[in-house]
Image (cartoon, rainbow, N blue to C red; front, side, top):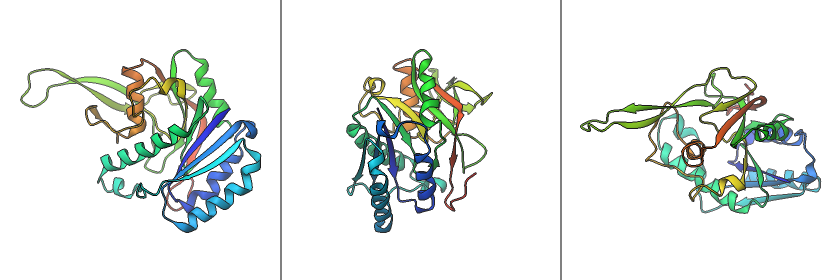
Length: 257
């Protein structure tokens, strides 16, 4: 059994494409639990979501919608202006932590609401866990923010802080080389990511969080990247990307790149 978890932010532009991707995933639907978390205040969106859920409910092991009215709607708009990234990261982390408490299966797939999943989303990522000591597996997605894939190598470099003679270490996110096949990575995303509770439960609580004490350069840091860092330096576990699991990321105009 597996749970697919999606934070539904109220994106009507990607609504139909998201469910199209969900329904073509090559995995027995009666072994999939669907968990939709939403803090949207858009009543039209919530009506469409409930209507769609009733249409597909009979096909899945279970389908659940959880409305979180105490968390204000999240938006990427202020990130694109370079504002309030910490506020956004903490809010997203809170949503994921609440979802995590409701997951009853060991395997769970984070699938973002503006991502169109490929048919091999689950089986392709489970292949990553056939490798040794894997704690995180993601697919790749064509991304609306540029030519990158939301995936980075992770390097550690030494730096000299101002007015401090002590050498400190800083994580550095850099471009991934050879992006094909199954590869070890440094940092990934939650766009299409397969995780296990038996692994995540070993991490410090809360599992999904912002950490200002983690020095990292070269990428916008959210709870997904913090998870990768903690899997690295706390559990010493590998993070893999299967580049043959290729999702499509939709932009605000509903255009698939």
